[in-house]
Image (cartoon, rainbow, N blue to C red; front, side):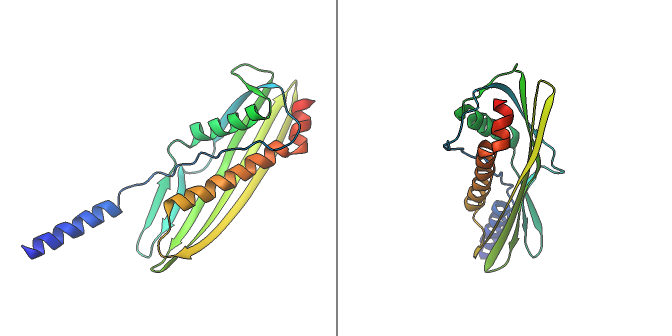
Length: 183
């Protein structure tokens, strides 16, 4: 009976450990002091990454891939909120087209017995067009962290959201973006 309980406990622990997780990313842009855009625009977010894996956790004996299932809708909401807070009117039909292209969004975690290290990279391209003129610019960012014991999924999500928020802030404050949208 004792062996049965031990076996059942181990099976439960293994089952809980292998449950796939989902990374939740929803960056929140806070308004910075800068000129308002005040233009109607359409907004599209495209995910052009090679894989839908957002976080990869490397253990000594295996690898775990964690996706972000609502990534495009969440980023669409975040970018729409950011442009709206800056005075733009996001609508389905407008003369200004804004396209956000996600080329890279990934964090790799090296999990060891008593510590972990994470490294993340983001590459987002902003494309805009209006009256035959086009604008394109890449915004990139990185984050690195180390900690004791096992990684914390909530901390990884927070780091990735902060990195995305910083990129959105850089876009909203970019003089070239402001000039293109106002011109």
